[in-house]
Length: 121
Image (tube, rainbow, N blue to C red; front, side, top):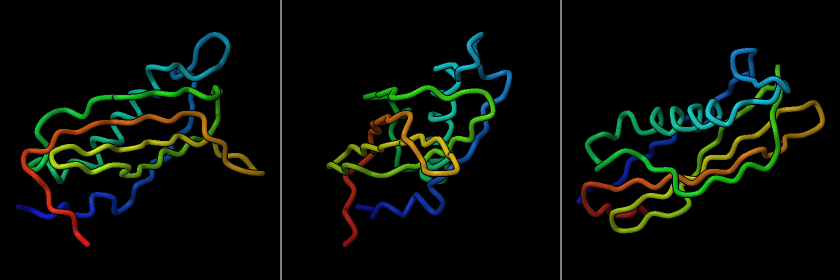
């Protein structure tokens, strides 16, 4: 059995909403947000390909607020469950502002692992 390596050396990604990312109301297109989240998950797992069995699958998505043109967004990741051959990864999308950060989206991605992983203590 292998021990799961720390896959989150830098579990953050920033991006700014541009003209190419918005609809007529200047709100961020949902497919652009999803592509950013999916790419973020892939980037976290890129050096763990030998342990991942298949493509990460979106299990749950909760859109809480809109993001608009020129908004600065930050994606954060956190492992919320590690079972025998499954890893559940929570991705939070925060909108950065001067006063605080507000969560605009939560997503859970499920990953099937190739073999049982021993949990490091």
